Image (cartoon, rainbow, N blue to C red; front, side, top):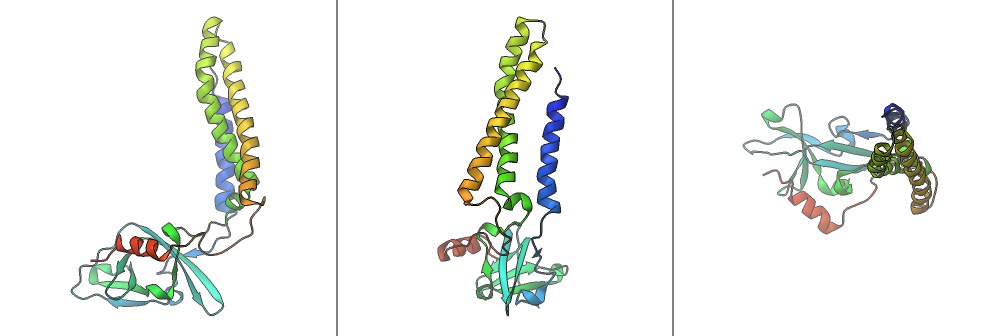
Length: 216
């Protein structure tokens, strides 16, 4: 049983996905404490308050003049008394936090900022790659018992033929389906670069999101 070619193909496919996700990614996203002046926030000291930030991811758009900056980080809380979004600083143990007025920014739904990597925008490439990986995986799962049975009927040499054949069939079918469906769903092969949130909360969803992340 020789799995080396299959392993090499899988690693190569994942390498392609990571290449186009990381190296070809023009997305500009910052942490709030990196560019505090663009968050419309300020540093304050909460005296006598037990502020509790959590590990929830948050992202938001902040517009200053004609420019917009996208921020994303993990760890924040909501101060309902003052209507602030609160971010910890390196001096949080002394009570210092960055506060951003909630109504001065636009929150991204589920804390997700838009991903402009080539892999995310190129729907043909993404569909082909994901279809190839998923289809190949399904082919491997389905083909293993068939190939094992065929090998038991002979001298074992038929295993590779049957197994790799079903993997190739699954991968090819998956690539065709993925490469067709993904562009069709988005209505284009490659999307333009767009900064900001991919989706937004409704008023009710945003309030529920903030209420789950109260500072105290």
